[in-house]
Image (cartoon, rainbow, N blue to C red; front, side, top):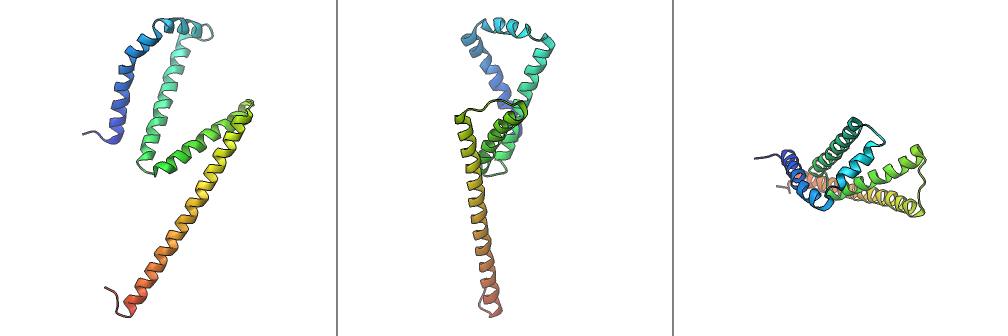
Length: 150
């Protein structure tokens, strides 16, 4: 059988080839016009290299997310993904001086606030669980000393 990662790669491969007829059906020959328009500002090699690199990085991003999902709780992954998106917006504003709309700013604040609240809540409940386990261990040790345990 396939491992989870191999299965992801095979499914992605088949999905790509199965989508080609739909692309041709929906887009038709407008792809050729778009290709010619894109070539007006770059060479064919640069365009193909950009497409391949973009596809490769998109695939690798999805593969990393797939791997992460098998190692962390889905909510933790969703929070991390939200934080990644907020980071990209903030980085584009700082590095490229892209203007940010009020709606995007509010969304970023909500995203950062949500991640903060999630982290604080998770930390609180982890501490409560740790205390509970310590109390159970102490009670178990105490009952074992008096010959009452096991």
